Length: 171
Image (cartoon, rainbow, N blue to C red):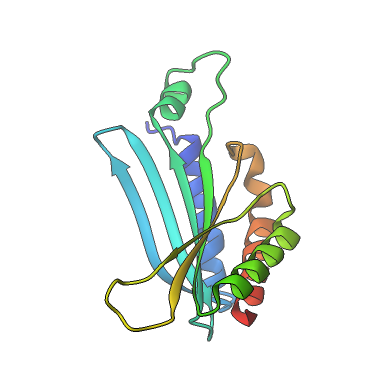
């Protein structure tokens, strides 16, 4: 009999909650989904990307990842190790005014996600294109791992993501 891992349980809970926002509540549109088993390093990764319904300017992405040490700690029941997953939130937005918009984005994310979760903004532009538009990839990396004890926090996490999407669409 298959015994699901912490990763599997979190993935299913997160996936169900996000798909409910799409299918039942019609608040978001899912734009991409990733479910990956990386055999070379024995890691698992799940990602789902979405945007607010009717707002194509900003996307949010949730990524869960469990590496070999996390999976081994759980499967082998290694003492003194608590299995879990890393969580990454990513927002994507096109910007034109780097200093003004990046500063505003940092303020918004610091207000919504608390100052201890510092956003990392990475700007890119296609070489050779004559445009003043930059792609801004904004990441929030949680410093600690999550496990099944945080499952009841998923609805609140998603509400914070939706609030972030609403605010980033205004920038």
